[in-house]
Image (cartoon, rainbow, N blue to C red):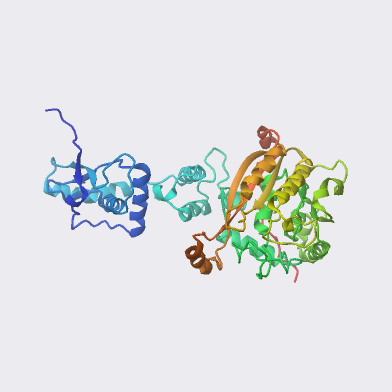
Amino acid sequence: MKPGIRIDYLPLEGLKPYDRNPKTHSPEQIERLVASLTEFGWTRPLLIGDDGTLVAGHGTWTAAKLVRDRGLSIPNHPDAATAPTVALAHLSAEQRRAYVIADNRLSELGRWDDALLGAELADLQGLGVDMDAIGFDAADLEALCADGAGADTKAGASGKSLVERFGVPPFTVLDAKQGYWRDRKAAWTALGVHAEEGREHLPDTNVATDWMRRGSAVGGSAFDPVLAELVFRWFTPGAGAAILDPFGGEATKGVIAATLGYAYTGVELRGEQVQANRAQWLKVRDRLPPERLAQVRHEPVWIEGDSAKIDSLLPAGRLYDLVFTSPPYYDLEIYSKGEKDGSAFESYDRFISWYRDIFRQACGRLKPNRFAVVKIGDVRDERGFYRNFLGDNIACFLDAGLGFYNEAVLATPIGSLALRAGRQFTASRKLGRGHQNVLCFFGGDPGRIKAEFPQEIEVGDVAPDDPAP
């Protein structure tokens, strides 16, 4: 008889746990084992004694029963009511008792290379792999990043964390709920950056996510200052870069651009908004500490005018290093009642035609090998279906000659969404929207990015000294 290991597929219910197993399994761990089973399948058998008592695999056995009870499937195993097992018949009863402990303890003695682990997890997350199936979650990954793990794996690495190097980890999920994001946002707010000025009459899309027609909600959808800072730092060739904002809106983008040393030009239809923006910049400038004030190279420029005529509003021949904006939402935020305001057009088709022409003009002002970035969210029609505004944006920029280069989700604070989501879901099965979309396009040769964009991102304190009172 040839030596070997025989695998028997036995009913889960015929197996039993070792009642003196000192290893415990939390509900959270069991759920991750469920995710692992449904993602990877059975990759190792359960180890049992002659009587069906488990020696190794207690947690996986528990998870397998949940998979069966929930009607889930295991990729390489058609019968979810059974499990692959190996009977340790060559071990004595005492050895099997000892191996219950050895199996767990010996695996604990290994150590992680945190830098390699962080880098590998970040890559896998970027590829869309389910982190729960691996046994890690976003908090685990963030802890690694906060410790500097995974930031560098090559010789000569700085040893800094991703937050220290880039302000925020450069992942496809930009999490505005994290402490590092909140702290930076609070610092910008302390300098006097406020999105509400000039927009008091607008509906708040964070308070009314599925608000489709004009309503009674108050406030406006404020632009996140940290997102503005990141886009400027990440997607321009450096300080002094010229930024074009086809839909200026409130002051945030212009104020932050100027504070960081960029040359910002925004086009805004509403005269009262332009005046409010200019006033806010003067207030912020007066509060800047000397070190930050010294970095201001250009006053932000807001041009009052119709974005549909943006080409004629801009200086002849002027080219820009970045197109960056948060465009208007058709029939969601009504900015004004004027016939030139695309948000109030009578049809979505007319809105999109108007919208595409504006970005055709704006992207025609980009220098070669430069980015265009938009922060958007989808909107629903009168029946509650999404209009596919995201897809229309992608088509718009592709037709303007740019390539679709990056996409990210901006995970926003939940706030009052937690109070509304249950009622909304029960009534309509609509999910509460807790994110916005950031779409990034590139015009030119991506091979030139390394040569034309800084390899080290300058990220310091928002205000190196305390702002003036």
